[in-house]
Picture (cartoon, rainbow, N blue to C red):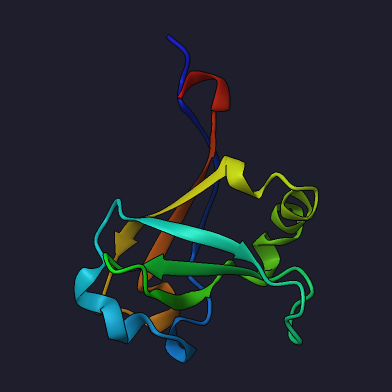
Length: 115
């Protein structure tokens, strides 16, 4: 049997302090799926990839970003139209540590032929 996902990247959520994590903190849990979205017009990072949570009503919350040191190749995939092959989920939550280390993300590549 083929694997449905292939590991791509693990990183901490960047910019957590400056965005809307606190608004939805109680809704976040290990394994929850988050949306990755390309942000080409970001004035701080031309390769910016947003990490967004959509609640049950479809309201979106910007949680932060994929760190700059990790997003270059990912941004290229998004720019080529391959963004939908990636899945992002929370793999670790550590509330009692520095805010930049509180949420760990795992990004996998979906096997479109085996879904």
